[in-house]
Image (cartoon, rainbow, N blue to C red):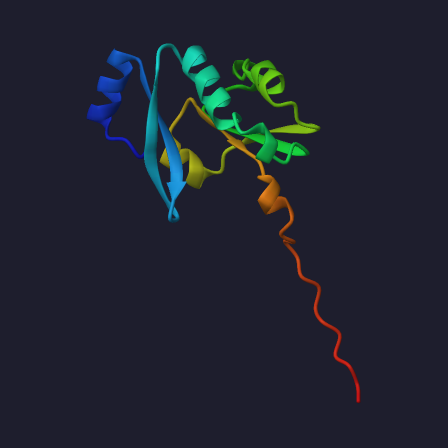
Length: 129
């Protein structure tokens, strides 16, 4: 992943869980969660979904790496904090998995500001004179 083996051993010993964020198209450590994995996962979910008024709650992707779907026991926490209409579980691509490492997950959703931006622009009609 993005964290060296030496740092990962230290994080495991101290029950630290780095949270990677995307800043200027680069993955960097945004902050650290502490405690067991389930405790850190709940704190991450609550922190990520805390601004509920600005979240487009139509679709959520829970993308994960190196976990079985039955290990994703925190789905109920997501629905309690911020209920979404549709939730999809998605295995991370190899590019994401190599950056985040095994046993990691992320919440992917649109913000209300982003939801207004069309993803596809149909070609303009050429008017004939």
